[in-house]
Image (cartoon, rainbow, N blue to C red; front, side):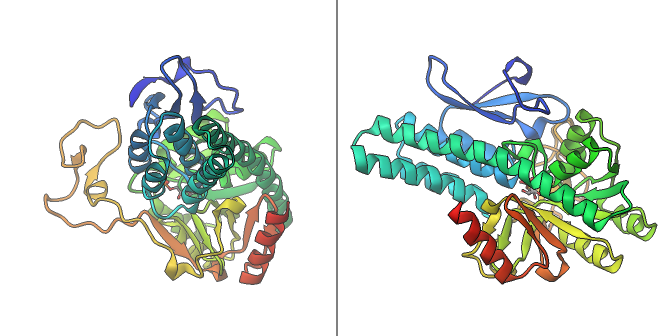
Length: 377
Ligand code: MRU
């Protein structure tokens, strides 16, 4: 895995952020990632030449966010295939790199199935690798399309729920172009509102401990000239109490069959606040984030991350000192509780916005019908 300056790469994304791309230099195909751990200080790319490098990039959150994890996983299988690694082994390692975002497993399986089918049909490793790559490219393209459709559905829903206009939207974690083949999920809805002159303010939760809100959502909001304000996660309560939040828009890492939503830790408290203050709590996620195999919230595996992410400041700009590479902010030896995600029960979710339409109220039956409809398309 090698670093390079991202500004040298070609990029035709609307926001100009080269999140991930497949390249075929003479030395052999590579997957190029924008290293999100270095944002916003610097735009540096990671060049993955083998699946192990991609697994490490996923674990370290160099690439992160549910939809793009699926796309990266699919390209990872293609990378293994074209470079002659054992595909099943690489697929298992990729799929196991992070447990909560179901998109990762979905993306890996899609490319692996394409590879297996082509191998069975042709008996040719080259053709099988090409099939895996085609599957990854298709997922990448479909995710961009899904993102645009979610933005349109989400904006229509906001207008319906908030007829007065001038939306003040609170968001958590990062759900924009950095997590997607397109402009993202929840952030794409806020961006659509901004472009149509309907976004009065985007409230950006900093998102402890890894600051995806401060480092990444604020970065995307600034690049898009949105009116945004950063707050500590703990400040959300007083913002609701002051009547400053019209809607909450968040993404999802996995939506169980009953409509329970796993998303970045801190989402559930926002849902509780939103209910208390009669504010819509809207989840925006592609159908690939729905997991009909997981019956309910209690069955969702929540990733536990190392304690040093809490006991140290691990932002990329700080000098190296502690065990995790950051400055200690707690006494040495302090234990930390550091789940990466929490689960919001369906009764606290006003609506789930997908590319196939809006589910509201959120019920197991409505979600099953939506999944069935999307499989027929
Ligand atoms: O740990 P992360 O940064 O991968 O967590 C990401 C989130 O929780 C996002 O909100 C989620 O993946 C939805 S992105 C559309």
